[in-house]
Length: 533
Ligand SMILES: CC(=O)SCCNC(=O)CCNC(=O)[C@H](O)C(C)(C)COP(=O)(O)OP(=O)(O)OC[C@H]1O[C@@H](n2cnc3c(N)ncnc32)[C@H](O)[C@@H]1OP(=O)(O)O
Ligand SMILES: CC(=O)C(=O)O
Image 1: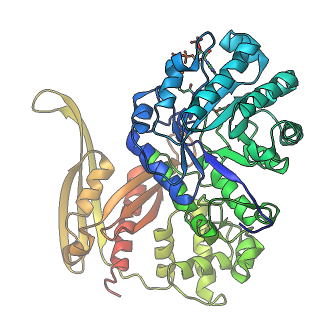
Image 2: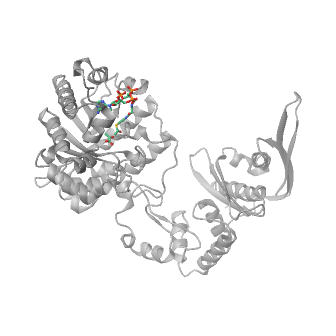
Image 3: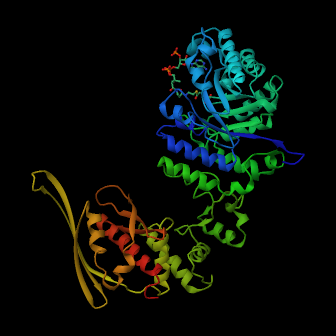
């Protein structure tokens, strides 16, 4: 932090509001791992969950998690008609092994009447007493003023008195929440500016939901108006459409001079280089596919498909990149497709280790071959290994390792020995390797699995090179509707080195399309092993 920069604090609620995302269910182990990832990145506050609400969160706060970040427990303010000391919800919070407590408090008079069913003064008393009780036990206290902006628009005096009561009772942070996510950045900026004359900006936070897809913009608007804490989540998880996405906010705050020159955050530029990894790790733990189009960290965030763009990127990457991909731990992709020009081909060939001059006639032949095959339904932008083989074949550099002279796949539904009706799949393959001819048969849990097993059962002299080959993903896309449709199959393979590669096959027949992708996968593996080169 330099003399001219102000500290801006990041508060992560992936483990609390993120747990309110449809389809997200963290285990205790997930929560501990994710807290570690956030801590390592340099996030200031990690909100772990709601002790007392469920067994996972109670267990999470049952032990000291030893984070550098301020580990924070979340829960509601005391109920009306009882003291904080006699409120079981507040008691669970006070017992949490955490450094801070974040209370959620109603700030919209309508909610106080409808959801709480108590008086406006009782709600204020709830805020004051809950904050005081947590302060007295030595916690840093935050108050999330739920529905603050809607509340402010309906009854500014009451919304402000909630914020003031929280602050005057000793809350370190009064967090203004756009709970329903419908407030626009310009409204947020104006309201936060007004509130900052009641609660100083360096005690104000923003918690924005993404219902108009502006949670990041809303958070930045609040910062411009004086707020100095941003709440958000990794990958924008959160109730309904999610929360402000810290995976987008962090690089913006560190790389865009309007913020980077004015503010310092806990995440360093060095740690920023791990952001893509952190984002992918979260998806992996949740078993979700990463959003390819996520700003900064998505696989397509620095992908160039159009030929005209690729040509410029090859000259100077900055022509089509707003920041260097490596700064966030991502990488540049130049895609090969029917939108490509020769520059895309050159770039991709160089990436896979093939150097070729732009005026080499083979480049144009490779491009023509790509475009011809894409018009038949092949797609090379996601099938790097098939593209590599296509290029190598045009260059005359792929040996004819083996030839499948014939294959047969049988699917049969019949009664088994114990009288159950079951579907069997079996395949037979006749392969020629040099002068040797092998016939292999195998059963599988489906026709493609049986074909794969038969194909890889005996490849003669090449068998030892493919022993560690494993198919890890199989995707089918029907290109035109109806039973006469063309089918595209993408197969992802991996080997013992951890390398993965994707191959593609296209045919009106799904087994044939799979066969093409399977044979490309085996051929790629043999080329990768340097066999016959
Ligand atoms: C905007 C947000 O995202 S807030 C975060 C919300 N997160 C969650 O709700 C996730 C975890 N929640 C839970 O597991 C449960 O809701 C619990 C354990 C907290 C409470 O469960 P229950 O006691 O069965 O209550 P239930 O969930 O049905 O209703 C919430 C109660 O809290 C009261 N309440 C809500 N907000 C507050 C508040 N800020 N202060 C005091 N009381 C509140 C409601 O009036 C309601 O009371 P009622 O039961 O007397 O009508
Ligand atoms: C506290 C919270 O999650 C909200 O108001 O959206």
